[in-house]
Image: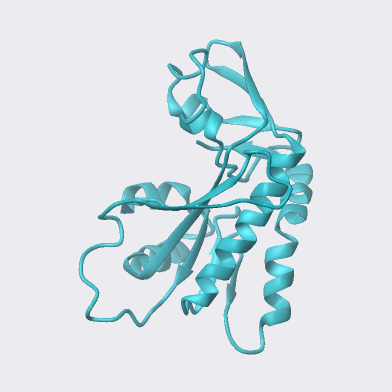
Length: 202
């Protein structure tokens, strides 16, 4: 999930950022075989936001929460080829298909481009280290580095930590293609190490 920060919000805009319908768009890739990525604006309440943001420090968390009302969140959700198997009660294994990883990588880049295009002054991903980028006229090269190397950074991070730290939104786990073997499992039990480096956080 990616985010953008826009400190100067138009006074003509009413309502709360976590109220209203979920806006969804679908973009196919040229080699598409039906396994595409959907871009959504999730209904992200303050309590849910506080769970998914990476913990850096108390000061950082206070700063993030104080900016909550001026943050936009966009989620690239992949219809995945990967599959999950139940190993034991409360324990599942999910294997990330390489095609799904590429789709999500492209989705992340498109989401970041959308956030920049609408005028967000700061963009970021809910990565464990709170990585973000301040957008300005001189940061085009930084943007391509920031968006293009995210998957590689994720893999390296996971290898160093020996555990999963990144969120891969999956239609298998989020319910679109969910089968009976996992649909009864609690959400907190659907967290599993993926392919040695990526975690699944439904």
